[in-house]
Image 1: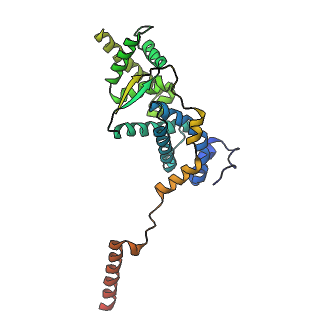
Image 2: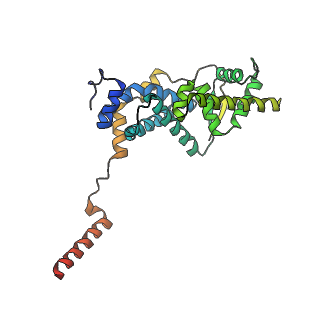
Image 3: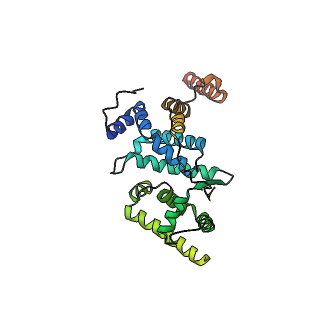
Length: 187
Length: 68
């Protein structure tokens, strides 16, 4: 395995080499393990071992399909996020039991502000908002998670979904509008 | 299936450096990849069906050869 001869190489050069020789993929693994592990860890609500398995699977799929990666102006990291996103969703689908994912209170506050639900929320109101989120379909939840819990930019979300940045923004704000309506209906 | 729940404490959901280091292992990654992708090394004579198929093909070729 080529371990130390990659330090002078750029990401694009490493990808090109990894397409020909899998041993160069190790350098990409070293570069991106941490952000991808953080991503899966958060999406799985802090489940350390499952996040490690999902991260491992993400990199395996990336190595198997690296020939399909083309640099179309988005970063390799975003391509990895897209694979990780699919792997996490597959994990949730396979799970027979309901998996509870914790949300930090500050993230609830951010959703609350963006959806114009008021500046401050009591614990009961926060619980109610979580309940409303749980009633939404998976696709909407994925977007909410990426934007507010993972704190990804619209550009990064757009890359994951292979859509334009404006489209990503529009989708997120439509979900927030729906959330706002549901909130109003319940009040 | 996933359900959200409000976190009871203020601790951010982030892995520690120790947790990251514990799972970041490129050697194990390559090892797992080999296990996942390598072909079965089972010899032909161990695979009964394939072995019989080979014998059958051999007999057919033998008969075709001696028919002329």
